[in-house]
Length: 387
Image 1 (cartoon, rainbow, N blue to C red):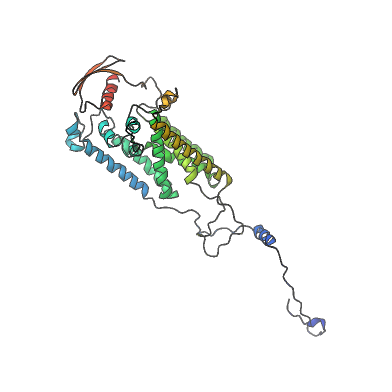
Image 2: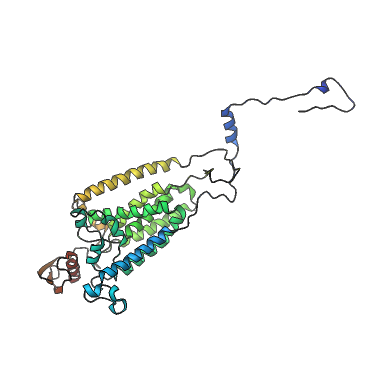
């Protein structure tokens, strides 16, 4: 308090020095006082989430385009096929006959040779690597263009928000998950494309919205918009010749991975290592909410169980269609405009010459095969004859 001496008056009490000793308080009481203060508002220049410069997604797009050009180089339609489309302009890179491949691309033989998903080769030949390689191949110009444009719009945004260390593994694992489900149900056709990985990114966007629900504004509008986009893309899969099992498998895998890889810290949590100097947090919050931890644990369990069980069933030759009578409708729904029934033909083959009769409409056709042992080429000719 100091000394106080009123003017014109002197007494012994006025010379007394009054001292106040601070009261000792417990650590618990001190924490209660600190927590009773209102939380400090972060300064304007504080950035709780890092923005990444996207580079991995553009590289993936470039790799897919380069690989498609390489596939067309290996295909060499003028040398290995007949009735090539665009031979005068593209030369060696000319496309297969549009009746064989309307997507403007290579032959099924070339795709099969370079790593397309072929269940017989995966099971009998133990070529499990085809679950990965098929996601980097595409059936034609339209196919690769549609997938890469989708990846450009979806992938760039996700990499900016979460970085390449999260989006890279998510893209690859979702693609493998899509290939795995496809191999369990699509047994008689080859499959290629990055659609499974793309649907994995859409699934991750949905789970990211759910797990980080409290951080978003206009939650319901964002959720409904995203669900509409997903539903429209999945609806395309009911058309014939579209592998919707790869879409569904990639979407589920991406959704579960999003719960693991795309978690955001809850609102109010501050990383003190990245905060400005002198910034003080009175009340420390847990980094994640309880429901985020629960989703993470369940998603990890489902992912590990799904991959282990799926690989075990695939390597043992399990056919999903034999155990699920309605599952084929997930990939193709018959309508008056198209049929989902697989074409069947009676054939007589002499060397490279094939005489074929469709058993449904009884049409006849004679063809010269580029490879007499290529069952996929024969099936394509049968489908063309029966359409």
